[in-house]
Image 1 (tube, one colour):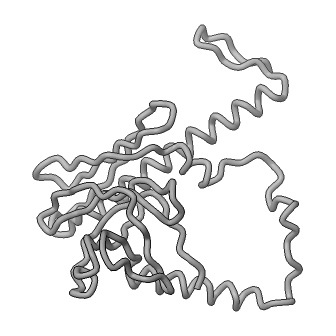
Image 2 (cartoon, rainbow, N blue to C red):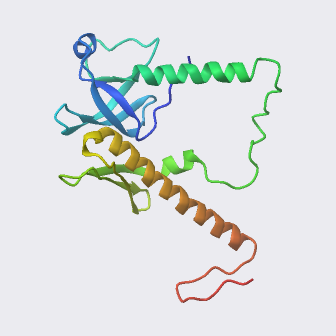
Image 3 (cartoon, rainbow, N blue to C red):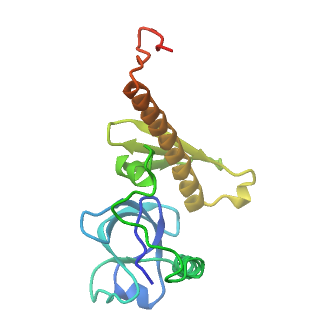
Length: 209
């Protein structure tokens, strides 16, 4: 199976050392940053009581890798590995070798300007979260490279269904969707100007028709 690529916001299992792995005592953690070393991440680690701590420069171990004899590391959860395997099997079934001509890597699949997820991820520096006491609301404050902070939220109706990690994940996705919309508007504005149109300035001057 191909390696799973770590991305910001995903949940992963964290182990302080090999003993925790052997005793099957993982800690849930969220990826806060990726790199700069290949397959290394910075994590926010959640304790059983819901408190969090930071783990930096953590190697992500996958099938075929050796478990470090000492020191911290992270592994994907079994269901994540299963999903990745099922996806690869489905892709092979839909695209058997030799039935579909390979795409020339020099020719992009999309030729028109567009906003990609990779571009959005490159703008995100990190995120912090807040859950107002006594509520099921989770707020994600996403910090972007230009200093902007975008807020995403999540909530559930029944307090019994509230899950901290799920709330953080959904709030992060909500904030990311808003960044995507902002970048889409910015791309549209650049395309508008590229066609010789006059942008709408802060003084209220209207664009040319």
